[in-house]
Image (tube, rainbow, N blue to C red; front, side, top):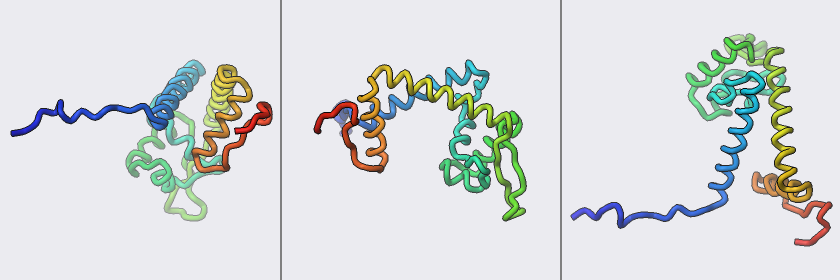
Length: 161
């Protein structure tokens, strides 16, 4: 006899990964909405994920697949769409004429500038919600969790942990 699935209900626990994921979704929704208000509605689309993986001095298209963790075909499609929008351009790789390098266009540089303004605005709202000292601690904790240095209290707090 097969036991009903109800006997195997696992509890969904609250954990740090879940909270980080939820916060990242909130941040991305805010960012996408503000970029749309600046005329960049496509930031909510998958192709926008190419931009953080591009070096400002150009990136070999073949490198994007491993950086993004997607298929070669997906990279090709995303790059084609961004080229069509005038955000990036392909140029022959001078070191390997069989491959392409991807560069930001002037329009792409303006998009990056708009994105930086939006990121600073969101960060300012977070700092206002948490206060300067707690925000500094929050940023320090994120660095530690990412594998950076160990946490230390913000100098503004002046307390021991």
